[in-house]
View 1 (tube, rainbow, N blue to C red):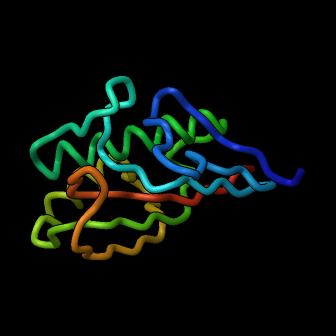
View 2 (view 1 turned 45 degrees about the horizontal axis):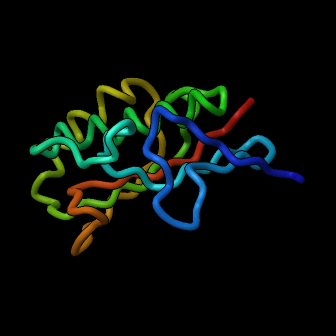
Length: 127
């Protein structure tokens, strides 16, 4: 098979018929992460800053399971319920991608699973 599933107990388990991530040759595609605590499976954080940090920690755990890090991310898609919170989200995001940040799309949405305020998916390049 030309691809394999990426899984990590450091990120929430998939809650539907999808994988946490897929490694296809040199590419790693990470499913969107919401701010769920990986151990409890509960939504965490009252603020967009706390939720953004949890989401990025979940993505970081999945990248580590694939043998990669945040520096290998080439593209992110950010989904936000309230785009007024964009500056606050951006400050947290910038701490995780301090140099050569990946390309990014940010989309305002009506709602997200479990009442989350943010969801982020990512694509990384291995090698």
